[in-house]
Structures are given as structure tokens and as C-alpha cells.
Amino acid sequence: MRASKLASAVVGLSIGAVACSSGAPAAIFVAQPSPTGTSANDEKLDKELLGPNPPQAPQLSAPVQNSTIQIDGMTRSYVAFVPKDLPKNAPLLLAFHGTGMNGELMRAYTGYEFDKLADSKKFVVVYPSGYGRHWNDCRKDAKYPARTENINNVEFVREIIDKYRESRDIDPKRIFAMGYSNGGHMTYRLASAMPGQIKALSAVAANFPGPSNNVCPAIKSPMPMLMITGTKDPLDPYNGGDVVVAGTSYGKVLSSSDTAAHFAKLNDNTAAPQDTTLPHQADSGSTSVAVRNYAEPGKPPVTQYTVNNGGHVVPNQVFEAPSQLGPTTQDLDAPPVIWDFFMKNSG
Image (tube, rainbow, N blue to C red):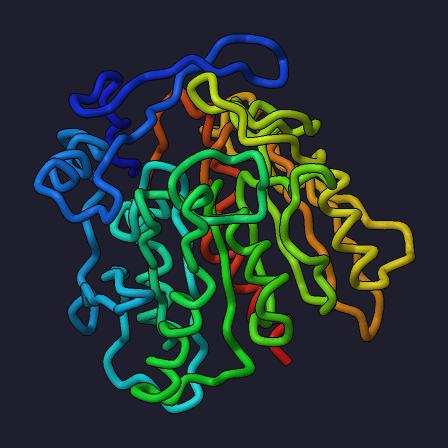
């Protein structure tokens, strides 16, 4: 069963109006925490974001770790789960949160499903926390401090990877990145800045920046890519255009279809894509999920999940995002689908 929805009004947050692609108004919580995300107010903010009945963290084989790393004189934090009896050469998954969140909230927003998968499948999952609850991604027009101060998140990620290579003997050839919203845009930066080091990526509710809004060098290395987007996303428009949060533009993005085609071209997938539809669940309401696969022998695949009437959410079976972010479907359980995609393309 799902956890209760977030409270519709949250102390310590400002509620700004944004426009969805259909032109209908929507609302989204915009956090205003301390830059480092370590104040007492931030702790209160986290509790209020999750509401009075947050999803319950699962029983795991080992404790969840809250750790820090020094980067450019700053203390950067992350949450990690390393399962008991982790074998050598295990995979590493980096899961990046969205705007206004942190690593701990990303665990909850994905229904703690990556934790449970890591426990059963024996891999390490790390949830880094951004600077001021944002990531310095590739979007030139984003104005939050992580971007305007040009925070070196890539070095932060490199240090995390190095730590687990040294302490846990993770497999350097099986390092994966997934991200939600701003975190999805962070995975695009990693694909550009760390060619060959990230084996595959998944971006949820994050279309690729438009050419005039992209400050990152072109991605050179083909890689498997899975994306999940909703046609009723009120922030990152499914059909492309301006990403607007609380009246502030983060610049233009491509459409979801053009994002998938961009990566298919990068991977030299020239054959026509194959389209299917996932089985519809009774409690999915008006949502449905279409799947487009770009795949050719010997070439990294691209898979695009379109949640018809879906919102700016990570579809999962445990946690339902606030209604201001749009509907969540039950036809797609994103965390195991993402992990299965990574494993199928880890050779």
C-alpha cells in the first residue's frame, strides 16, 4: 500500500505557481534551505516534506550510512546502503535527488525500493545530497546557487566512486547513475564529464537541455539509457520548452521523444524503434504506459517510458508524490525496471 500523500501546505516552504504543458496551473513546493543542507531548519523541512505518515524504511541486512566527503573545502554529504556479505566486484548505483530534496528524501521518494533491491541483489546504492538541495547540471539558464557558484559535483561523484572502489572493491565497469528531475539532469552532466566511467544512466522527469541551454561538452561515449517521463509533467514539459519552477525559468529542454532520439543517435541506433504498451492496472486510473525501444545488435539500447497522464514523479509501489506534481501510475514500478535495465546492459 502507498504511504499517505504529502501535506498540501508545508511550513518552511514557499508554494509557487507553474504552468504545465497544457497551460493549466499547478503548484510545486520549492525548498529554501541552507546551502549545505545541515541546519536544524533543514531537518524540520525534511519531516514536513514527508508529512505525518511517511513511508516506512524497510528492515535491511545492514545499517544505512550517513557519510561526508570534503570537496573544495566544503563538507558534502551522502546516504549509502551497503548490504551484508557484499561480494567483491559488486555494482554501484548512484541515485540523484530532485530540486528541493536531499539524499534521504530520495530514498523515500523511490519508496526505499533501491535499498531493498540492493539488499537482495547485492550492490551498493548511494544517494548523494546536492548543494543547497540542487545539482550543478548542464542547464545554462538555471539560477540556483549550485549552478551560479559552479559547484564541482563531478568531483564529489568521483570521490564517492573512489571510496567504494577502495573500501568495498566495487566493479569499476558496473557503475550506474539514475536521477529524478534535477538529479536526472545531473546524470547528463556525468555522461558528458565522465565518459566510460558511467556504464548506463536513467533519467526520470528530466528531458535533455536544448542546444542554447546546454553548457556541457557533447556526450562522446555511447551508453545504454532509460528515461521515464509523464505527459502531464507540470515542470519539465513532455513536449519540450521552458522548465519553470515557481515562476523562474531553468531554460529550454528538448521534448521527451527528441531526448530519446538524441541518445539513440549517439548510440548509432538507426533502425526504427519498437513500440509496446504495459499492462494496465485497475488502480492506475487514467494513466497508461507506452514503451519505445531503440535497439540493434551490438549497440547500446535506449528505452523511453511515456506515462500518459503521468506527472513529475518516480513511479513506484510505495510512495505517492504530492498531487501538485501530477498523477502517479501503478502500471510502472520504476526502481526494479531501472535496475533490470542496468543489469541487462552491464556486459
